[in-house]
Image 1 (cartoon, rainbow, N blue to C red):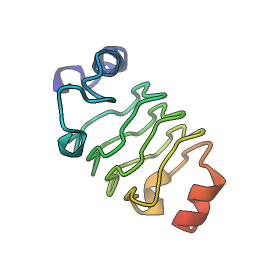
Image 2 (cartoon, helix red, strand yellow):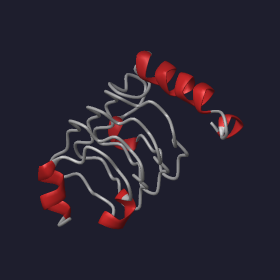
Image 3 (tube, helix red, strand yellow):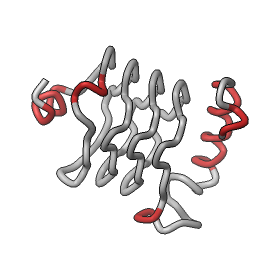
Image 4 (spheres, rainbow, N blue to C red):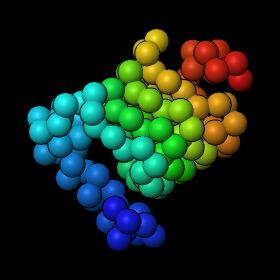
Length: 120
């Protein structure tokens, strides 16, 4: 992913490949509780419909990512940057760890329930 740091199109292609082959998502090859994307640079990536349930995304850079309908149930998102992301219809549960609300600068479509939970 570092090779494509400034190439959003290629970065998105890699992420799609990982999702389509279930390396990320249903996690056939990895124990989901051990999937670690901490500090990942996923800014600008199209991650709509991704299943990040149980994934460690702490301190990941998700700036400008399309996260529509992504599943974050039980995910560790502490310190992750959601600036300018699209959060339409995302899913989460009581085990999801969220970053401080300051990490949502200019995010769009933040669900009302999440706004309440994070005290926006």
